[in-house]
Image (cartoon, rainbow, N blue to C red):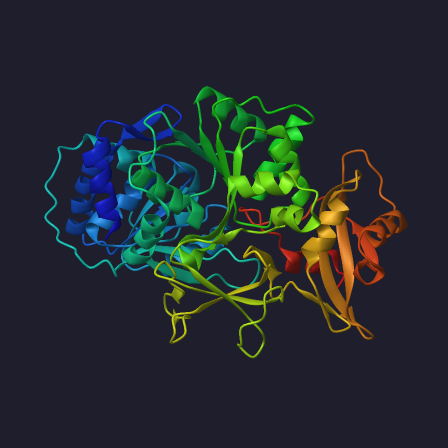
Length: 498
């Protein structure tokens, strides 16, 4: 099955139902498939080999994705938040591309000979040109459909290759075709260059659900969009949900149409999700855990599990709010020790995943999947006795103090509960006695002052002495990727505490 098949199925079943909306611009499923076929013929005739996209979310993005699919070439969304030099370097790695670019990013092309069109002009031309029969037959679902430069929190980005079979396997295994009611709408602020942005296009097209784009996120604009568009579901990253909760204060959200909110892309601090559950009492929250290399989600903590954990007095059940739930159907997960052997339930190790949606392939490098089909994610995790998966961070983030593996998020969640702390990063620094020592960097709430010893005692009372930071530094803000991942390496570098 190919992405073009998804577009064909949606056009045939949902017809004139609105598929994507961004401000005043909308496109139906029928129009989407017809315009994508027309654009695909142009791409083929001009002998392009890749279609690149440098722009924010708009109706042009899903049109670009399906046009590339019909044409038999990969779509490569680029991160518009990168520096001009970084983007130029990435553009020069692409094979015979046509670049679709928003007007505000055309300055990146200075000095480069890259064929390009403005996103709006290209989209309008595809939608207003006379329909053309698609004189292309592409049956190979193993062809690359999407190439994403991995965002990462350190090191040079790699080009993750996702083939049609990976992306459609994820959708078919997790979503029932046409399961959305005609009145349903989902609001997304996730950028196009993130796997969640691409996944939103595919999964919602398969379901028949209208997608409302909010390219420039703010908590107030998000709440207004939910209310004005009658949004029934939404997708956010943890930093967005934190801002929404902060904007609401102690007030309930008052978003009567909203029924589901999915979040992912980075670790969700427990105080944030607990506050969100209180502000949105009628909303089912879903934690979707996945990676670029796995075609998005591989595990879910569903709405019922959130509410059960929130209402429980049992610490183990309550702690499931910190989990990512259980693996999706068709996904296998193993937790392994340093020798590669599976660990016992409850023990922490390195997370490996296997399944038809797992790619683990990088352009120019090859596959990182082993002979048995397992992909090492680089995350450290554990299963509890009821099969809930707890991801405790990247293996490089784990602090090893005196031979004990310490997950920073345990300490961060405690510090975030202090009324004077708005944000926090916990890192390990070299220590001649213990190997590493724990250091916290906190961002105070506006107008608040923080005392190092008071915060140390706060952690010691909640945890224990060996988990108490040796030092606590104060900073005006912390560095994050655009999708909300904390850059711990940059915390160490910028604050000169290595």
